[in-house]
Structures are given as C-alpha cells and as structure tokens.
Length: 312
Image 1 (cartoon, rainbow, N blue to C red):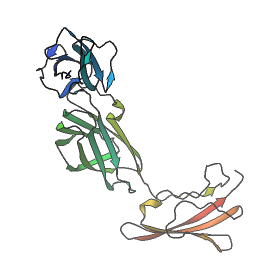
Image 2: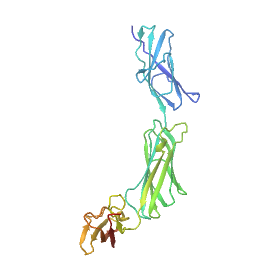
Image 3: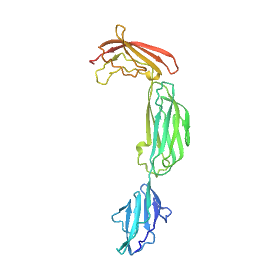
Image 4: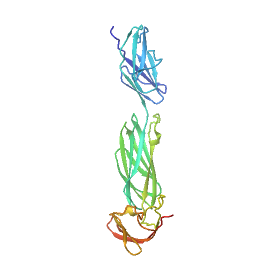
C-alpha cells in the first residue's frame, strides 16, 4: 500500500485573535503564552493519527488537530484502519517568540585622573529570536561625572539632557548588535559607578533573561601620588606590599629604596608595579626616591621614608 502523505496547516491564535492560516508546511511563530492549532488538511474519520514533536510521539495526541504551546518541530502520521501507517508529514516548526535584550557598558581600561577625558562604550544586542522595535537605552550619569559629548553611534538617535543619555533604536533585529560611544571626565578622584539599562518597545514580548537588561561599570579616577609610610609584610593580606596610589597615571617611574646608611637595597626593574615587600630585609626605617615622568613628559620626584614592621 502506498503511504499517504499528509499536509498540515496551521491557524494561529494569540490573545483571542486568529492569524492568517498557513496551508503549507513552514514556520509558525507565536508569542510566549500563546498557542498554535495544527490540523490535518482534509481529515478522514477512518484514519487514526499520531502527532510528534522533535521526532518523539506525543502521548494522547491522536486526533487530527493539535494545540501546541511549546517550541519544536511538529509532524503527524496517519494509520488506515490500524493497518497501514503513512510517512510523517512535512515539519511545522513552532517558534515561541521571546525577548532577550542585553546591554554592556564598559569604560576605557587606561588610568585617568580628575578632569581627564575618557570613553564609555555601550553595546546593546538582541539575543532573542525575533526583532524588537523601539529599543531604548538609558544611562543616568552620576554627579561626579561631566558629560563631554556623544562620540559615535552605529544606529538610532542619542541625546543628553540633565545628566541622562537616551539612545533610541527604531528596530533591533534578531542577533543584531549596536554600539554607542560617550566621552566624559571625572570631577574628582574616587570611584565612579555608572549603570546603563535597556528595554524593548513591544510589551507583549516576554523577556526571559532580565538580568542582562542592565550593566554597571566601575571606574577609578586616580588621585595624586600617595606613598604609605608603613608596610607590614606578615602575610595577612593587609599592607603586605608598598602600594603607591596614583602611580598608574605616570608613563614612566623608577623606585629606589635605601637603608639608614645610604645603601640602595631595592631598585624597581623599570616601572614600579606596587610589589615591594621588603623581602630579605630586617625591620626598620628605609628611605625612598620615586622618580616620575608624566603623560606630558614632565619629570618630578617624590622622597620620604618607610617603616618596615613584620609582627603587626
């Protein structure tokens, strides 16, 4: 007996509104929470039916119609009076449309000081499985930042008003990624914490991953050179090394340390990397000379003393 091939058609229902029926196999798209009704075209009461999702038989799915809510590849077969089973029908791929917008905000990695311009990069990506219209990215700049301008954007419009950056993208397609660059500067030394957020304009699209709808960047605005006068290298993780604040702002530096008799006991091999622990030296007072060359090429030096204590 020649197996009978079945054609499946779909009628989509979302919020009690019927979409146009498809009469050939293909993709069926529904929103999260919606349903798709699949049926055999021209069903025969003398046949029994079996529906499949992703190649596996669905228990109890034995009529010529099937209501589905889950994504997957659906097919159906028919058996004539329990004797001859047809081939599987063409595949109907049911796609449950969901949203997954991701925003990532990153500042430049290079060290900067107060009133020194630097860039933020804001990237938004549509990781969902459908296009997302009227995407909005908001970035509320903290009060210790000064906005200098929008450097570039790859799509949409971006504006700044009263410390808020609003970036509007008319349509962000599935798997599309766009970038916005901002130029700012820190007002004073300290830590700048800045968060950007994103949302889509279609409220019927459920966002299954809201955790990536916001992104926080922490940027250190480096202050003036500050050298501690005591280190306690006892392995407790506190003051174990000589950490010089602000040294990262200088393009060149050299640290030399001398004992009380003027003998050099340490010299940094190139730029000092905040790693001297007084290894091999006894407790006591030592003197340092820190030579610096600024980004602009100006030379300067800082001198002082350090007390080395191991039992604190």
